[in-house]
Image (tube, rainbow, N blue to C red; front, top):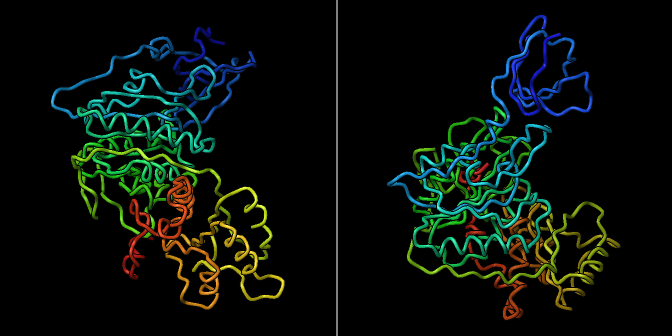
Length: 428
């Protein structure tokens, strides 16, 4: 057996009987086995007795050096808000787990390409949290941090890094919270961490940087357009949804086209957008958490409304394709319960269960009955966006008498005109 003089965290090459293997040594509780993380991202255990030779390619301590933040003359400045998620995670070389990437110098070491596109003037870390643990308080904190950067005349745009799973909720919230937007606000992500060969982090971040200095004063989500490492889409924050659990192109625009195709070196706008302007951004974070999002399923009893009406001010129901709920079956008619609770001030909104398309209360009598009972049909608004918007609308006490009008008012591109077949096919 060869002399084993490496430490956890070192990047090594082992000579075995029939082949060589290289990777990063991880901490192991079994002294007879070396745990090695391969370039593919997988971990394997190698009995020490099988290691015939060792070469240390990089010592762990050498990789811990912190670099200064690069700066290049002639590049525009941006701000970055780091909130967590895979894009802000790095491999802990000793344990094989991940830790947060929040130091500016470390960020530059992992993502050097972005500093060839922009100067990162400010990085702020309001918190580090997985997106499933976020609440409206986190959305408000992000909005406040972004607002501070937008008010800096030397900053051309802002990037927000975020976990993927509930990113489209945050992009909707920022779309409503940041009024009179004057510069780009770009949310981006990665499905796979930067230490993996198949990571989507670097291209997403480069494209986000390119979009942050573009002409589009929109809240946008930027990410891979396909499974290939070629270009990204910039998608409106209120019209985008995560549609795949693991693919690089997890996010797709729904019922609309992307705002732009984005490469690391250029932007090609393909639909209308709000251009940069000299307006003063207004922060409006009035929000009520007394809301719920419920998916209707066959056989669901209307008594569920009794529970929600007791605890909440309003609900978004992801109903049938056109927004229907049961109205005619004896013993399974939602109309009496809906009328009772809506009459008492409970807000009920309907979105479609479908990914593409919109609600319509006029096609069948079912829809007309629901509308007459007071259900608000939300056109082609995405259910997640509708949930956030309902909290935003109910958070404004002065709007209490105008809830229907406000829910159907187009604040941030969340409602589109009716699409023809050709547009549907492009979106899908």
